[in-house]
Length: 448
Image 1 (tube, rainbow, N blue to C red):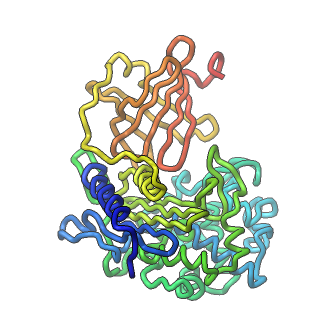
Image 2 (tube, helix red, strand yellow):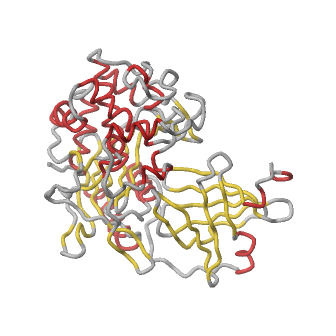
Image 3 (cartoon, rainbow, N blue to C red):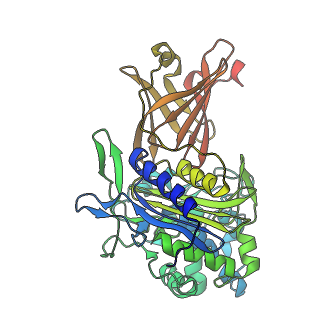
C-alpha cells in the first residue's frame, strides 16, 4: 500500500504509539489515513511472544464486534435487491421465534429488540470452546424472556446480529460466510478477511494474550463460530481500510444504504447507534473485544479520516489510544503515555468504597470493590471471564470520587450521599457504561 503524509504528523503518531506500546501494553497494528492518503500503517509489539514474531500491517487479528458492520451491510445489500426490508417482522423469516411478530429487523440492527445478550445466557456461553450451529443458537435465544418491549429502549445485544446472520442465510440461500465472500469482500478488494474457523491454519495469524496476576498470559480458547454474525470475522488493518474506502466509494452498497447504516436511530447517553456503528456528532466507530483481542475502527464524517487499531491483547486501553490518535490528527493537545508512577491512596477511603455494586435493571451486571492490603481492586465478569484490576484515584470531591485503571479502559465514579457514604457508581468499561447501586442502597430511600 502506498503511503503519503506530512512527515511531522507521521512522526508524532509513531512516537505516540511507541510509547503506548511501551507503557500502555499495546501490541497490535495501526493504520491512519486522511483524505485517502495513508499517514501510518505499522505493527507494534509481538504477534507471537513464544516464537518472537512481530506484528506487521499484514498481521491477521480477530475483530470481534467490528463484524457487525459487515452483517448490517449484507442486510442492506439484500434490501437493495428487494429480498427483504428492515421493517419486516422477524416472524417472516423465523416463524416460530417467540414475539417475532413484534420484533423487526430494524430492532435487531439497532439493539432495541429486547432479546437478552448472548453473553448473559450461561447455557449458551458454556459452549465457548465448541460452538453451536446457528439454527440451534437462535433457537436457544428464542427461549429467553424479553428484557423490555421491542423498540422501547437501547441495550447493546450481540444476539440480534446472530439472528440477522441466520436471516441472511435463509434469504440468500448461501451460508453467512459464503455470502460475505461473494458479495462484500471481493467488491471492497479485501483478500485477508473471513470467517474465523478455529481449526484452520491461517497465515500471519496473531496469537491472543490476556493479563493475569503473573503478567501477560495466553488468552483462553474461544471458538468464534459461537458469535457467528455478531463477531466471527478476522481481518487486517489494510483490509479494514479498504472496507471504509469502499463505503465512501459506494462499491459494495449504495449511498442510500451507507446513509441508512450511519443514521443515528437510538441514543445511549452521549452516543447514538446506527446499523452496526456507534455515532457521535462528528464520527462513526465500533469496538470489538474477545479473549485475547481488541479492535476499533473509527472514521470522521468530515475530512475522511480513518483509524483502524487491531490489538492482540484484551487489556489495552484502546479507546484512550484512539482518542490520542484523533487528537494528533486534529492538531489538538494530547497526553503521551508515561511510565506508571506509584500512586498512594488514603486507606481510610477504601472502607467506604468496598462492596458489591449491582445494576437494578440487569442484576447480572455486578462489580465488586475490595481492599487488598491497601490496594483498591475492582472485579467483574466480561464474557464469563473474571477481570481484576487495581484502580487509582483521579479526582476526589465532597460528593463524588473518580477512579481509573491503568491497564484497562475503565473509569469509575462513586457518588456519595449527604453522610459521605457511596451509594451509587457509574462504571465506564471500554465504550459501555453501567450504572450500579451499592447493596445497602438497593432499597432506595435518600438515594433514589
